[in-house]
Length: 195
Image 1 (cartoon, rainbow, N blue to C red):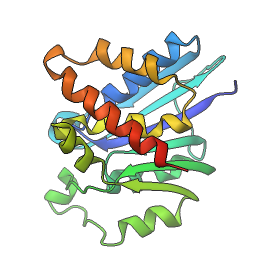
Image 2: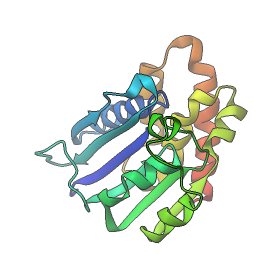
Image 3: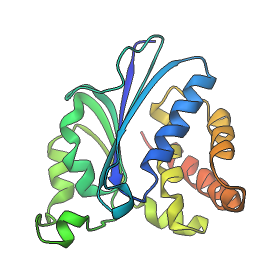
């Protein structure tokens, strides 16, 4: 397979890094070469977090070039818009519509655009927005948003859902496993609805 490029963007504390780890681990388990890179300097303070994951038969660099991402997984609308320039022309955007004010918005450096959904749709052809936070809360914990989003995008990834579940079990603390499995099921239900 040629290289499949993924950008995962969100706010610190949403599980961006865990999601990229689960994707990378699953892909390696399936025999793919994987490279991963992330920027998380403000991750614990609610700042912008981005992770690059590249999957293929042979991958040489961990960084996705601008305009080369096949898939952008957005955990928050403003963060999705912030990194949409990484998406290739026919790339896919799946993003959570629940808004979180980042530090830059909270301190007044940036204003949260009222038309954020239109900005995203204007800059991408294949856009799938949904309230993943609502599903995570339904699962029992809003912190399972990352699992909901991961399972929702499985339709577009070359990953086996059973191996994804094993990777989730390997990387999630045992006390949080039951709610994460519920989020997994809810995400798969959403995955079946995506075109």
